[in-house]
Amino acid sequence: MKFRILLAACTALAVAAPAAAQEGMPQARKVFPFGAQWLAVSLNGKRYDMNDRPALNIDSQMRARGFGGCNTFSATSYPLNQQRFAVGPIALTKKACTPALMELEREFLVALRTAQQWDLSGGALILRGQAGELRFERTF
Image (cartoon, rainbow, N blue to C red; front, side, top):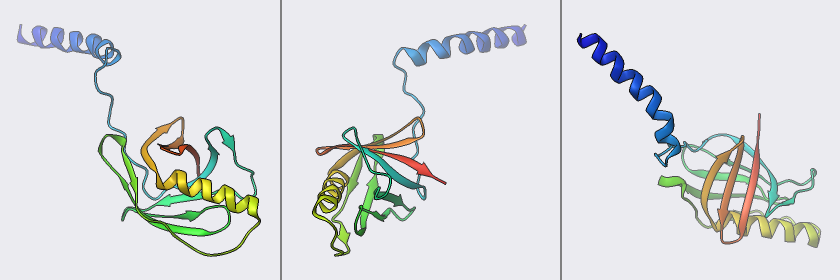
């Protein structure tokens, strides 16, 4: 008898769980992908040229390193609770590039520095903040 009651309760939970998830129940917590290599795809919907795409890696020590399109950079980064995100001051090499490339790099670094939220969607890392949305694809 106890087995039948337990079986009925488990069946009821199995049926109700998907419906409850659709009604606003919290989804599984996303985990930030430390150590992954990311290449920038776009900034505010504008795609990057394949030759000088910015790159980003955030290691388990919360150190962001990468390429801005002309120079390499590093900064402390903090993927926080509830998919919040913060980046400290950015250290940057001083290589000179064309004015157009320097402007693209500046826009990328401003968007990275002001990012306040991260998300993973369809295999992409998305950083959002005051300067817009940076979208990255993972490299392997």
